[in-house]
Amino acid sequence: MKGVVDSGTIATAPLFRTHTKQPRFVISATSGFPQSAAARVPQHAFFQVDGWQGKWTAATLDAKSGSKTSHANITLPALSPGRHILCACAVTGDLATVQNSRVGSNSPVISPIGAMVFTVEK
Image (cartoon, rainbow, N blue to C red; front, side, top):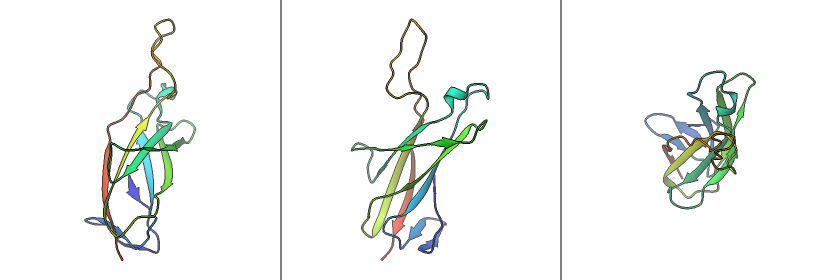
C-alpha cells in the first residue's frame, strides 16, 4: 500500500503524514502464481482503519490484461487528527464459492494482511 501524494501531503518518510482528513491510498496486489493462472490474479481487496477485527470495506482490484498485479484507489472515511493504521488484504477468485470436489477446488486464496501507519495532522 502507499499513500497518494496530494497537496495535503507533508512527508513520506519515515511516516506518511497528511493534513487531508480523508486520505487516499493505492492498494496493489501481485499474484505469485504462474503467468498462465489468470484466474489467480487478485480481484478483490478488503481494508479497515484502526483495527482488524471489525467491519472490513471491500474494494475491487483492477488489472491490465496480461498483468499479474492489480490495483485499487481507495479514499478513507473522515478521520480525526492523530496516528492511524490502515490494514488491507487481497483475494483471488470468486468470494462466494466453496470447495467443490466434483469440479475441483474453487475456494478463494487470501493474502496476508498488510498494514501502513500514517498520521493525519491538524
